[in-house]
Length: 268
Image (tube, rainbow, N blue to C red; front, side):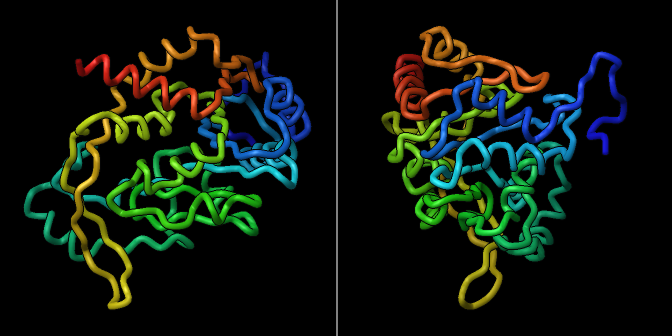
């Protein structure tokens, strides 16, 4: 099976075993919690695609390690804020009334790559209950990381990102840059007086499906590439290649604390 429409003559086949070897070479170690953001296609041709990548990650983490991925469903949001593409104002009430409620078992992730769809359906996987910004995890810390995801704290103190911070987790950017590093959003909650926005989502309640509105921090990743570049320059990022992809491995606490300082200086 090919994950891309064409295969370059210079390509070599990657396997579960070769990916695992390269992950170990990058510094991924057994045990602990690892939050992974990835674009599997950038690894090159992988025999088994995202399934093999998930298996390789679990092989390296071992039975004491916990694999975590974002399983976001941002389409379940207020249509008044949709931009890619926007929809007519007349559609907004229809969408708010009929959008299917988030179901952690069946609602597919969107915009976060192919790997999260594999991880969230693995035996023993747990998924947090946030209708837009859920995370899935597999391993001994999965329940602790995903439980109690607060609606009005999608990427903040009531989210899996904060649980990962408490566990001193690591972040693996596998073929993606810091623009995809969701942990930097946790820093947005930790600056003084963060900006908030009103949003909505379809959720399941004891009374059935309903549309709810709530306030959360106004997430903005525009500065993440600049923050990430400055963090990398501090020599706390392990940089290497897995397959054909440029990759980064870093300690989540270091990145979040660095981003808080950067954002506060920028606002000042």
